[in-house]
Length: 99
Image 1 (cartoon, rainbow, N blue to C red):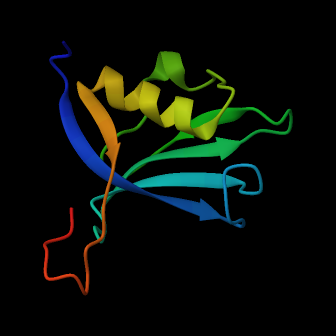
Image 2: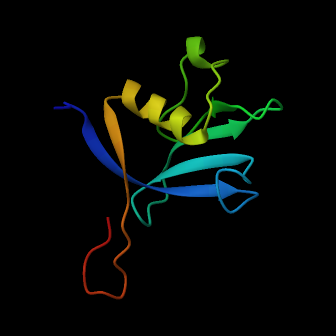
């Protein structure tokens, strides 16, 4: 069993509508949060590098690391910060609280 804290995130795909078409992917805290936890940007070689979020930024040693997907890049930095990411759920209009 993991000792990682879970954090609900929503994904933003910049200049696209999913990871395959986006040039940048951001993980925002919560379903409606305005704090960007982490950022991954597409490289020229169609790989992904970590950028600087409001909360997590890559260490110097990880600045040039490349990942096969934006999700794996952001999950990497989350894990190094002791966090496991889970998809945030919006419950607006259902009477329930959003993540």
